Length: 197
Ligand SMILES: Nc1nc2c(c(=O)[nH]1)N[C@H]1C(S)=C(S)[C@@H](COP(=O)(O)O)O[C@H]1N2
Ligand SMILES: [Mo]
Image 1 (tube, rainbow, N blue to C red):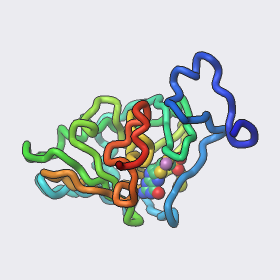
Image 2 (cartoon, rainbow, N blue to C red):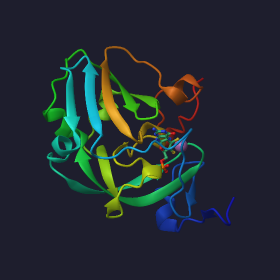
Image 3 (cartoon, rainbow, N blue to C red):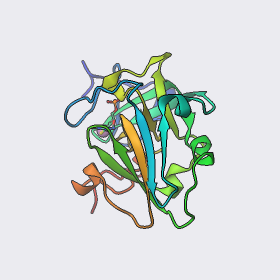
């Protein structure tokens, strides 16, 4: 596995690489299907389900507080990338400007292109989760989910929806694209929650 696409972690890095994962060289792109091309002018972000329906334009979304983030990234296909630098908006800040019904316990992430992935409210509201629109100081490239993606560092990266355009708040757990295709409903890398039983 070590060679062209993978590198050996240093002892220090090793502790940050979850079991069964290898450090990728560069930042691989992993997309199922086509890369949607979405301009910031046409970009819209919707909230619905067990929440007051709302729609945000790019300007409205970007008027929320912006922060720099450094996060590790773990794909279930066994590559990891440490210390990815992003600019974005905290999920907790976004949640302050929407009205979610207290009955909402799960969320379906929706994207341009039709990809979906589910996440529990508990996993979603963590302080370290964010919507990213810059990668290493540059506008987020389309192949990495630009103009806007979600990043959920503590779960496998298939939960980090690229081209995200909406959140559907739900009372009960539902399955997104990979979850319907045999992947774990939660996907915690340290517990190797790769596949559903
Ligand atoms: N909309 C959408 N989001 C997605 C995916 C996808 O195919 N479509 N792939 C997921 C998977 S499996 C991974 S590992 C990461 C990859 O992000 P990257 O291509 O920026 O490395 O995006 C996740 N988000
Ligand atoms: Mo992945």
